[in-house]
Picture 1: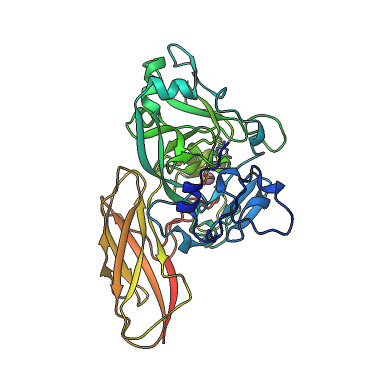
Picture 2 (picture 1 turned 135 degrees about the horizontal axis):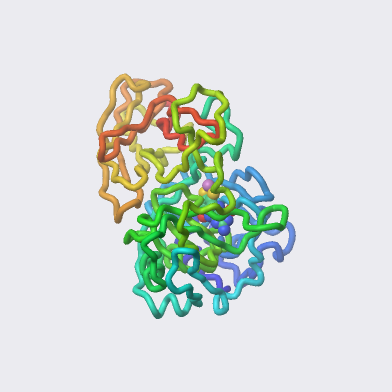
Length: 408
Ligand SMILES: Nc1nc2c(c(=O)[nH]1)N[C@H]1C(S)=C(S)[C@@H](COP(=O)(O)O)O[C@H]1N2
Ligand SMILES: [Mo]
């Protein structure tokens, strides 16, 4: 795969691109040892060892890593900043050939199963470009008390990039969706850590797949999708748990029942059907699948720990999103929630794209402050300031993001 330098430069945040190396690295692990990679594009990162230092690596096998929250500042998340989440083995990146890669639609509720090459998808269907927010169901899990088991994500297991591809709907309709269709089942090329079966195979209610904003995408931010984010083809659903946005996707089954693939079974990506006390045990039969994410926001500027100058307004900004809804209002507090100030808020570029907010704060005297951010969705539902409903697997934490600032 050719490295697109323009994308790299556009996407570079922490890496210095002042020096242009004359070499296109094919695989980052082949670079001379001891050499800091200035020109290793995120396109070809193929193991945890290739990730730049700014990633916090939770696991190397499977690979799970996230960037610091402030690096999510750009409206369009660059490919070299987005968090990385795999459930099992990595696909065999080195042997992926986009010319021969195929995508198959089948299943009990599919009229005519069909297999497409990427070129066929491109030529047969209308191309769409959308900004879609992908958030791991377990984003911010580390904030739950008591602690919930699982990857201890900070608040940055979320990103919003621009995806180009064809509508899931157009492809499913080309194959015919029977009236008894209930759910989709998403398939990909990566195996369970044991080497047996799919690492993950989740899906969405059929109505969601027939909506006009879910993609089968071959491009992220105008370039090939990086290996870590699903090269060469990715199913992308905004506003839903990231687990349904299948990377290195090989197909969709149109199911006549709720899909029963890997990680569909309770309690994976599920929450209790009734309110539970923090730390309480819940029977597996008492869980329901998370279909949508909920209202939330992140502060991406300034960086926590910043020193601000007294008398100079402090610009605070970030993003907000609300599952399948729009965010209606954004508020910020610097007095532990005693008073809230309304921030400016942009409209979403399209449904399920995150929205930008900003505010100038006049912090009244020198000293230590916490800045809290709180989004409210179109239904008037807002973020809890402490923690939301605790659940055994630590999903959907949407308490307010907080940063610390010292005024000097
Ligand atoms: N093929 C495949 N797709 C996958 C996964 C995976 O393990 N394998 N993980 C899912 C989960 S749980 C999340 S949160 C998102 C993460 O997307 P990212 O790595 O691009 O941030 O990918 C989803 N798609
Ligand atoms: Mo996830």
